[in-house]
Amino acid sequence: MLNEKKERVIMGIDPGTAVMGYGVILEKGNKTELISLGVVKMTHLDDPFLKLQRIFEKTVVLIDQYKPDVLAIEAPFYGKNIQVLLKLGRAQGIAIAAALSRNISVTEYSPRKIKQSITGSGNATKEQVAAMLQRLLNFKETPEFLDATDGLAVAVCHSFQKITTGGKSKTYSGWESFVSDNKTKVKGIVVKAKK
Image (cartoon, rainbow, N blue to C red; front, side, top):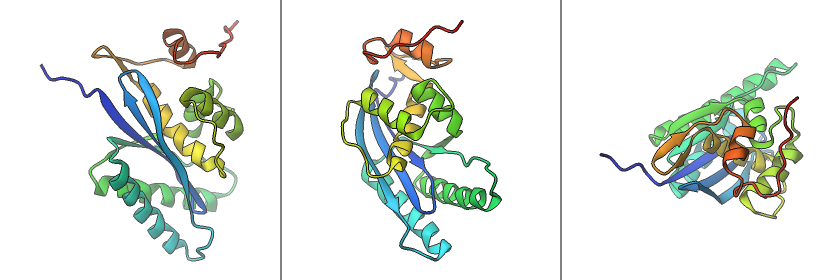
């Protein structure tokens, strides 16, 4: 019988062409620890192709540094401006290509799914997501850009999709079921029962 890996490093990326957020966490059994979070700024670059090159190069550097087992990435969302969607799609594609160039598997999550898995609400604000992550991962530093906590949220969302305990995997249907099974992990959080 093969032993299941007891530790897993997950990198999350919130793609962007001005600022790309990232977060890296370590799963040890049923505990999750923050390794790193930050941003890659591209506001000083005017050429869109140089921005894509920077995303690729920085993502490869982060992968080589943290050696994640998986990359979780936020999917572009459709807004009113199709040009913004195209730019986000390119940024996401480049980050995915960087992961694939290092043989790292990739999983994509919608912004709504990420917010819902972190806060219980798919309509949560960036600030609410950041505050919940600070409580879950026990860190007090507030990043300069919320893109950093957005990247971290993608990694934590991926972690929540399958929690390994005692050699058995458990999938949760939502935030409420996770909280009820993990009361010691989420101290002080009250989940309201649905009517």
